[in-house]
Image (cartoon, rainbow, N blue to C red; front, side, top):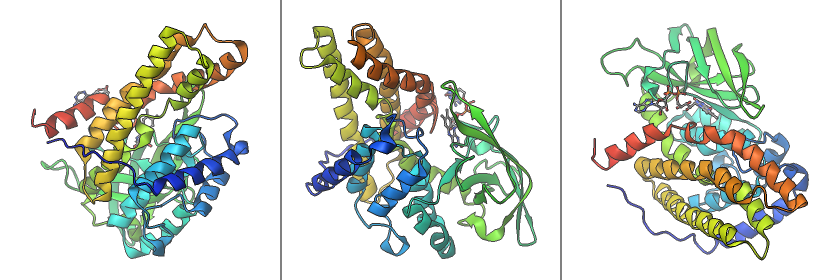
Length: 379
Ligand SMILES: Cc1cc2nc3c(=O)[nH]c(=O)nc-3n(C[C@H](O)[C@H](O)[C@H](O)COP(=O)(O)OP(=O)(O)OC[C@H]3O[C@@H](n4cnc5c(N)ncnc54)[C@H](O)[C@@H]3O)c2cc1C
């Protein structure tokens, strides 16, 4: 059954919030074109500054460079960064899920090798799940890894791999045994060195003109044995365990937040009744989604795996963030004074063009609704 405990952020997180806001106020150079979408803005210098502050790998053990802080503290930092439209994409995946995956399933040598660089904001990871003809139905992946002396030979193609052309590593889901009646058996996760393993990476242009995701082709690519994460064959269990981290965070409802900020600013102290009604409606949605998302952070803090609750937050949150620019356009677009209009227009166009992806990346709406229905015992 679904459960969202009422959780308030602990009071000590407020001091941290103030620290992050202070830091952002001094980071103007990195915030020239603020965008709350977590995949926009690959800025290694900014990521390193966050690392130096201890704001990457915040919940991880200190012996690997982590902060041993709570999921609530992490939550506050991530929501402030997104709300400000800070460029977080370089370290985002590594911080959100690859590092956590390595901590949970990786070998000690892998943890020592990769995690300190992640926490310093220097080492970036991509997700290698989707393939041509394998997205929602992830168990159908065909990229294969054949055992050879000292490692594996990988063949196949990964698709939509965000920032693979910029990042250092990818954790790829591959088939290490031929398909069998058990579709979830024989899958493994391996770490691919995107700079040195000889993979072919082709950026794919999106509708906004950006080149953020890629096709990654493996042609007899050799990967050493010590780069398998966990036990060979355990890939399905591992990859699904990543999803609670991937699906529940504030990035799943804040992608359009900068449009909201510009909209409130443009409406000023005396909004029209239609503007006031829209601002109230959007604000109440954000507050509700935020409480649900914080509740999931609370469950992660307690060591639970709230996959179904996370799917619900993502499904509702993606729907909201996709609608926000369109609602804003209907109520505001033609009624703004020139300077406010320009700031609004920039946030609006950047976000509107990216918004089709909000309900696809990280699992489509239909798939999430299936997860929720199963969690409710309806299928
Ligand atoms: C901006 C962006 C970034 C991405 N980044 C990454 C990344 O870094 N790494 C990565 O591995 N992937 C990434 N993806 C891929 C993403 O995870 C997939 O696109 C997504 O899971 C859908 O898979 P698909 O594109 O193959 O579509 P399909 O699975 O072919 O789905 C097509 C349509 O059919 C529907 N559908 C499919 N199966 C069912 C079903 N059983 N019941 C009902 N409806 C169904 C879907 O909801 C969808 O509407 C990214 C995608 C985007 C848009």
